Image 1 (cartoon, rainbow, N blue to C red):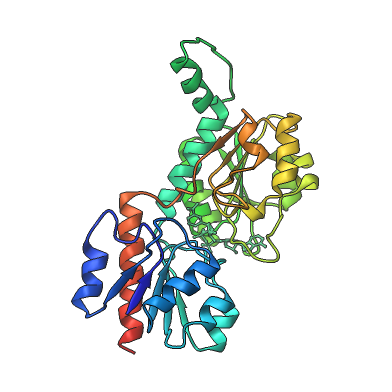
Image 2 (cartoon, rainbow, N blue to C red):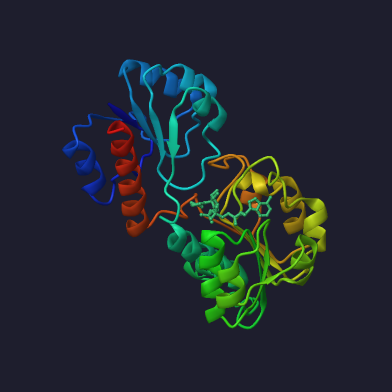
Length: 309
Ligand code: NAD
């Protein structure tokens, strides 16, 4: 018996759901039609007890949620980032946590580039003003041939770098580990975070959220960036200090930002919503038909694998 909180699980292709059913799994769906809160998870999961597996999106699988599920064997993340799952609590109970690395690299890299270009040329503002019957032909910046700084050269960071090559860019990288493929095939030059921030025209963030990366980009880091630079975040909202980013954008300390992720989602009361020089998307990095299929199949297969021992 598997409970699915991830609203987009098997949404654009039937195969992941059918795979589970074919293997005798009974599925219970998130009844709220939106991401669930801790208390809601506990209440809804109790209604369909016993539950042996969860397929989770961004909902908080906290210690309390885990403790309320005595029969739980597996938590399958419908995606990559597992920062919403209490891994320690799961480990203590011997619950297996799986994710789908590599399933959405291309999707997130595409969206990262959509945000880079949209921020550089203020595409949303141009669209809005054109619809309003105005003809405001404001200027932006070119991306071709410039310097991009990639913070976190893992799977998504490298997919972003591959696209940057097509834009004739000098590619700077910052990571705890230097990737040989990045250096040899993509020409990534590893530098310190400080140097990356100082030299890049585009800074894009692709690290996981943890104690070390929380607020990794704050006031001090933003002050190192070029006044003409663009900052893009498709990793996790908390990696950037949003208050500091708001101040930097409001005071034109940097040119623009593109954000797919926020410290609170949706960012209802965020002052960022009032700024013109920020392009916002509702955490849709992985929302392509192709990535949805890959994430769904990876989650379904890992559930069946665990159930089969
Ligand atoms: P990955 O594990 O392949 O790469 C992460 C990289 O960050 C690794 O190379 C790692 O060494 C590096 N890193 C970790 N901590 C660091 C630190 N303190 N300083 C510098 N580098 C550090 O992961 P990925 O598949 O590339 O995904 C990256 C993140 O993107 C995920 O953790 C997730 O939070 C986010 N993501 C967002 C979406 C979305 O919808 N917007 C979709 C998928 C993933």
